[in-house]
Image (cartoon, rainbow, N blue to C red):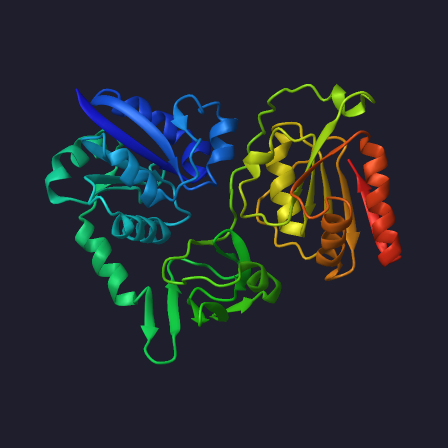
Amino acid sequence: MMKIGVVVHGPQIVDTGFAEKILRLLENYGNVEARLGGTMGRTAVIDAKLEDIIDINLKLLPSQSIDKISRESDVVFLINYGKSIVTGHAFGYKVFSRCHSDPDLIQIERPGEHDGTVIPWKPYLTDMAEKIANDLNLKVLNPSNVVDSMEPNSLYNSTEGENIVYRKIAGVSADENIFLNGIVVGRSTSSDVTLVAKNGILTHILGGKIKEHGVEKLGMIELDSAVVKTGLLRRSRIKPRIIERNIDQMYNKDTKLNISYLSHAAEDIYKLKDSDLVVTVGDDTTLVAADILYRFRVPIIGITDGDLDRVVEEGFRTVGSMIVELESGYDDIIGKKIFLELFNGRQTMEIENIENFKSKIIQIISNTTSRYNLKHN
């Protein structure tokens, strides 16, 4: 039997039901092993109850997942559902070019759309690609067409001497968030956007507005290899799946509670799913963390300042959560005070009473500023 590896990328391919459909289809051709590529699809896999079918345990880039699974596979499928055919093709081109294993790769892109395609990234895979395309009623696209459309755009190039790197973003629309390595660094104002970095620091967004606070959080990067996303992290409105856990211990005076601190939305939030409470700093960090941790019934205390980029269509929060809205720029100030004064500079701590802990946070805030609003959930 043929060994078929599948790398699933992004939430949309899962939310539309095509990930499961394609996995079932490929079982007709051989033994299938599937894993997630990237991290944004993990919540979608959990919501769809597919975590026993799609391995979500490793936090790897799509190219890394392909390299890993290709070692034990005769052929690897990359399945994705880009927001447009341009972004989907650009994604596949970049992922394939970053693979070190020279994999036998077939990409299935936007299978539910009229422009959906199957791309055999090696010529000798065309016959199999045609069979799969026929099963899914899609067209086969020669990869040379993708390469020809990508390379003239000069996705990135360096200016010698000045250490300036330019990177053009494919398939962006006006008024979309621009993410670099999971952090919102700006917003597009046109469909022609180029990122500019000097000495490893993002300095300009041509065709967009830069977000200085996001650039500060991002720090130094290698722009040509950074992970770039635009738009929403998750476009579908899917009812979250709640994974039950015992939360009575939060109100049991004899039980120690594990509290975690999170100041960066790009960190692995899933590592905090067994916490009893998570303190989050920043609007987008709070939104994303609250939405993910809602699945595990983990409440949050969010320290925000209204600088929200709305990175998901709809966010959820566990009952018992508290959001503190501060003046602009005060979220980081208060966050650092909480980290140093309550957490003693550590990422986790134990407490005995959650309400007392909330009171200590409010005390730190009121000692710093009188202008804040509390929202309880």
